Length: 347
Image (cartoon, rainbow, N blue to C red):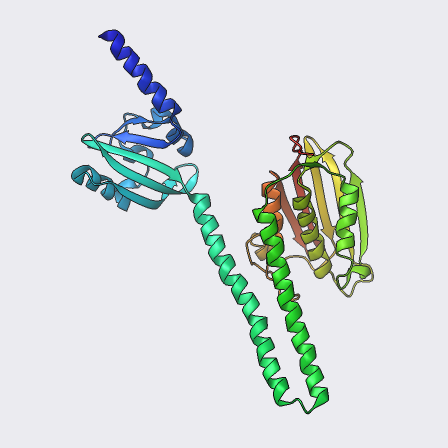
């Protein structure tokens, strides 16, 4: 009998330790009876933090939350409920959690899933869809209005040519919006592919691709490439990252300067590389520097754009497992990026 109980306890422990789903079991008073290891990992708890304790001891403020009343209702009625709720954590901030609550004997079982990233992705997608449609509709509406006006004044050739020039400008605006959206979708939807990176060649390719930009030939470009160790990464993401940073540096140059410059450096750094793209452009106001990586944020209306450039840069950096910092004042801007070497190359 005792061996049977020991075997049962071992099986029970093995199940809770190895279950992939994050779940926890409470008694009818909502004292924690047991937890899966996945639940502990999800919320960064230790077993002794929660087992044997009331739910309010490890989830502060739970008694005032709607979720607490739903838990009590499930215990009372036996009818399962699903809840999406922001859950405060004492040290990790807020989680957005999807919870499935169900009755277990006279107590409660709760299965939880962290959907913070999912909710943020949905929110970004909604903003993206709205902003993209708005930014494309605006120049299209202007084009249609100009066509109507040009048609009414078609006998005045000089006026008609002026309207055609304005239509061309609006069409170029729309083309720019579409190009930004296509590039953004391309880099966010693709899977990473690891190749041996030649930074000298890559930077040259990026500069060549931007050589048709207005103001490109006014800029003095400096390149300092001292990455001599073998470095593996996703070339498409790196190209997008460099293109957006250098594109911004060209657009936001100080046009009155005799020598606007852009400096690109790549150096070996521990198990990866440090990349810096710096310029002596107009700079970014301090109050905007925390927001420049947000989707569709623009710190100035001096040039056209929809505000995806630096958001895309941060996406690339995150996807490559790196980090990025920004320094900017009236003397110019510098972006510094660290990227780890991805040695599992797929050549």
